[in-house]
Amino acid sequence: MARFALVLVMILVILGSVSFSEAQLKLGFYDKTCPNAEKIVQSLVNQHIQNVPSLAAGLIRMHFHDCFVRGCDGSILINATSSNQQVEKVAPPNLTVRGFDFIDLVKSVLEKKCPGIVSCADVITLATRDSVAAIGGPTWNVPTGRRDGRISNATEAANNIPPPFGNFTTLITLFGNQGLDVTDLVLLSGAHTIGVSHCSSFSNRLFNFTGVGDQDPSLDSEYAANLKSRRCLSIADNTTKVEMDPGSRNTFDLSYFQLVLKRRGLFESDAALTMNSAALAQVRRFAGGSVQQFFAEFATAMEKMGRIGVKTGSDGEIRRTCAVVN
Image (tube, rainbow, N blue to C red; front, side, top):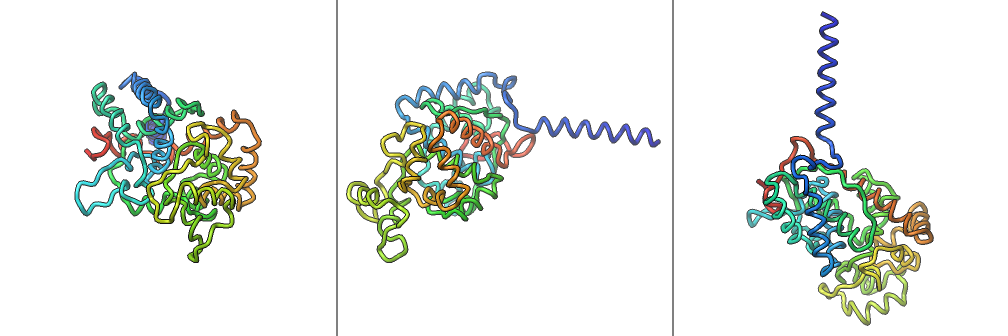
């Protein structure tokens, strides 16, 4: 009897481990069910990136914002189905997120080839990697097998996505909540080497930092004067766009870190990296290091972020249309 019980326990352990392993992300998850899935994503990215290189910055931001709310489950893509439903898309941090139409395009092509197989969460993750690589940035492994979430909540987005006005304590707390550390914070902030921002995300630093019409002293005064006279002419400007890394907004390089050290990071969150000794040490290391080293470590941080709170196995669903829960 004892031997039978032992054998039964061993069988259950084996079955449990098999179930666990099947439910995890893995490279080539779609090799048998949709063999050309990753090639399709990459091909569409390469076709579009030539005309719209800014797509890379849009997708990396979308991926980041998605993963910080309920994990990397594509919940940022969901549209409201009623007037009183507040989904992630309408949360303040996501009002300027771009790339939704492109994700919908990729998903529609995949649905024609392999209906109901490839998740929207994986489409975001793969397209982000491929778009960054397509503009000459780093590439990284993307284990697949994510499933799509069914819940999208604007309040959760507002509370969990690191804001551009965040101080170091706020940033490291929000990153820590996702299992990310100070090195990840600095590395992922390095994505600000590409893309643009609306004036409204930082204009308080120029015109009303503490509520008395003052300027943020942590922002280089010459840079601030240039922004105020040529780009963001008033605190009410919420349409003008400014390069986060002036002169190389479509080039993935080290200049972001060099600008942060010169007090020319656009956001308070950029300046916050210099307010903590551990973060500042990392900024200095990347600013004075090789682009190859930054690429390698950025790739590791992106793969780590892409595993946050993933739904796998029987959890979640595979949405047929990314904007609509099945």
